[in-house]
Image (tube, rainbow, N blue to C red; front, side, top):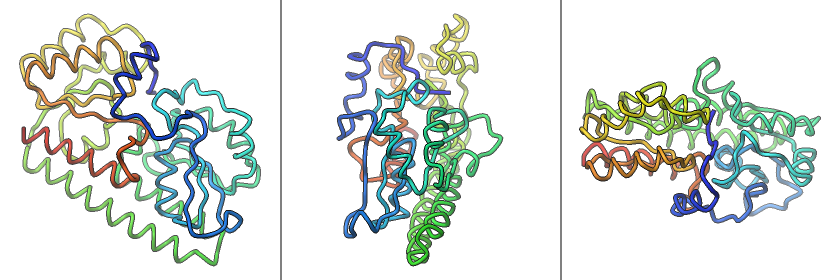
Length: 303
């Protein structure tokens, strides 16, 4: 599980300033294509703007997407849906959840969409895997795109080929990122990193980087429990002695420990790679975001 914040809203807001989203509400981001009337568009509700952006890439101007979570301060584990969310779900023709326990609130919400087609990204991308952050699983996201295209094609048969073509373009871009990430690993074999939380697990795997974070550390951060002193000491030593090339930091989980880890990394000359759970304000969509993430990793490995 992830995205459970334990610091004050003000502290989190400060730490997340560079990732602040353009929207001002944490419960009702709407991204729809342009060029066709709303009545001609397939109504889609996604649990987060990450998956909403994938739907938009596949559906183009033939979809109208509402993303429930699109704000770093909105925790999917404790989020309570609103009447507006329920209304959107009721009118949805397609819903897309992350699944894997990440956005349990959406299971109940999508139940409002009695006649909608329902997709769960985790079940498509990485069924049975322990890590639920499947939006960082690039090959898995390609599978989700295919399923989105198929579902949209069933809802709007006249545009079936358009959806398939859009998915093909999207997947080709993902393939380029997978290759780019894999090339990083080939150029920097046996590179070790630590993480404040295993959000980017799948991306690090694609880049063939070794996560040496003490399991007790990341487990405690995820579960909002006290991190054992021994795990803290081991984690800190890895950074201060530069036994790792980078610290991969989830900017949406801010605690005294994660803040100190970032401080220690910067002081020790260990690169800090920021990752997130919702789209940053400075990206145009999923591909742009992941391109920036891969480039950030590349910069860390070559610094």
